[in-house]
Image 1 (cartoon, rainbow, N blue to C red):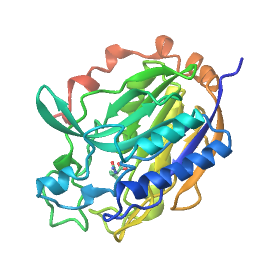
Image 2 (spheres, rainbow, N blue to C red):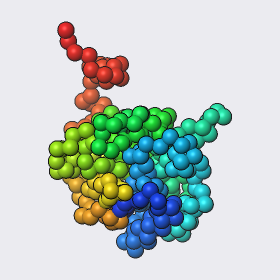
Image 3 (cartoon, helix red, strand yellow):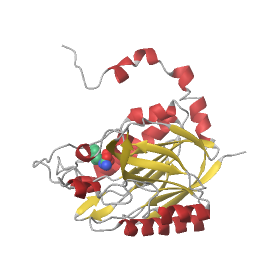
Length: 312
Ligand code: ING
């Protein structure tokens, strides 16, 4: 019995700094309505889907910063989204900035959640690889202050059994690191759900062609899918936010590494694909049969060392 899931990738266009949560949620519900009409069972939204990509701004006012975060989920702003998805019986994943109370302390994470068809949050992931910098950098054409506003996630790369498959999540920059997929691959992941907000320009290399960033965007998710025999659903928030452009290029990637669906615009756009989780099996049972082929005794540097140590 093939395990086919019709998946919707709900790319979102830009959210301006002045846009309310209601603006974002209304658009997410619109995409959910489209997904329902096309028979989707699972919908994936972008990273930081409720706000503009605020790490581009240098903010020192605590209230201003915390105003970009959610302290509860669902909450008054997102309940309409949860309600509509439950009404449709559609599972979904989306990213948001999370304030979590842990051991009496407040922590700030770049998070994503997986919500099942009944509206239950069954999975949470907090971004591990935080790109950018922690202090205002006058040398950059724009800021990327994820290390200022977020702590490194404390969930690690987990997977969840759901919809007759094994699902994992990561967020944006995580997709550029092979360890992300491999840790989930070693848990048998069959579909990785990820959102991203990727500037279309390099703040440190003005002459970097946009085509190269598009190429890197595809390269990461195609390699991650193929090398771990998993589907990857990579969904952007795209377009121009307060004068700063974010890449589109949302994609649904087959375990072969082939992109089988891709957005064509930089706005709100739904892509749909029928994903047979059994398509993972050939790769997991042959070329990437980890148990037969991997040699961890030679991989010690990967976890035993952080940066590069060159020979004398
Ligand atoms: N954004 C970017 C990303 O990893 C980036 C940051 C862009 C890093 C290009 C390196 C090169 O797609 C987020 N939010 O991680």
